[in-house]
Amino acid sequence: MTGATAPAAPTGWRLWLAGARPRTWPAAVVPVVVGTAAASGVVPIIWWRAAAALLVAVAIQVATNLVNDYADGTRGTDHARVGPLRLVGSGLVPAPTVKRAAMLTFALAAVAGAALAWAVGPELLAVGAASMVAGWAYTGGPKPYGYLGLGELFVFVFFGLVATVGTTYVQTEQITGLSVAASVPVGLLSVALLVVNNLRDIPTDARSGKQTLAVRMGDVATRRLYVAIVGVVALGVVACGVSRWPALLGLVGLAAAVAPVRTVTGGATGPQLIPVLGATGRFQMITGVLLAVGLAVGGQL
Image 1: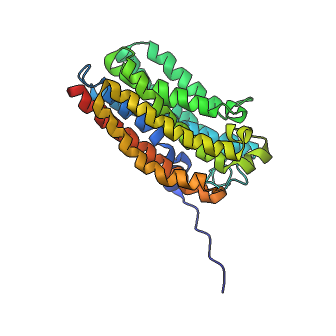
Image 2 (image 1 turned 135 degrees about the vertical axis):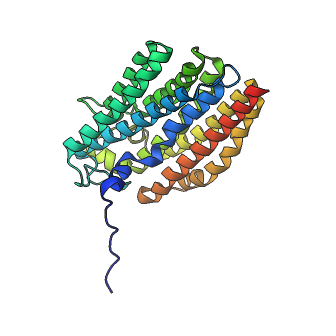
Image 3 (image 1 turned 120 degrees about the vertical axis):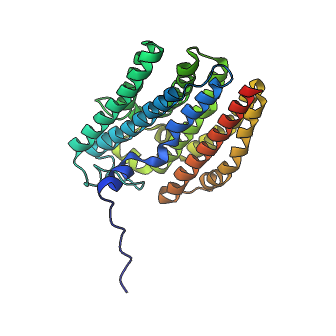
């Protein structure tokens, strides 16, 4: 009897979709949905602005993923990775091609961002430029801060505070306390995704010299961090409920965190943690959507 044949690698658009890492897209979608909901009840929602903000967020997320693929692949840190397919590390796509794809995706974000800046104000140009620079510098450049244990901070700031508050701003043209409060659980949900990813990669990252926060903290502390994040997300939803009580609907999303928390605290390692990334993304999306629904309903009361 022969062993099972490994599944064939995707080709064409499916290969690029895999490289874009769709399981991470909730990190871009949720802050825009929540930020738009936080603006409801304050001003009438301008839907093209919401769509443009969503395009900017998703494009920056995808571009950052491609930069990560390119940078880790050329540095050799992806050669022994146990996670999802990497374009450069697998040898399926040349590194310069992935780099060009990342730059084109950043350009798409810039075009959508310029439209928002034209409608709202030039201050959005600075915010967008900072977001793109941060996306590139995460693993690109001579001193990537993702290799210094600062990745979680970047994710919280740009996929939490900046994306959520910024989305509300493009509607209301002001920074609101509710959008700042909502950005905390939103940002932490994105951080949870990165924590799981880096927990899985502790052995390979440590060998390659990639000093992520998980490598610096160690296995046990990283698992505790994941659980703590889930708890603080719940507190953040409650804080939003103080302003608009229907936002407490977001607490229902905690049910989706039970399975990944059990897996993480149960000591799963390596490939066993791959499904946790998808489960954390579902937790993020469910909680974010329910929080947004609650905020939107509360804005009409």
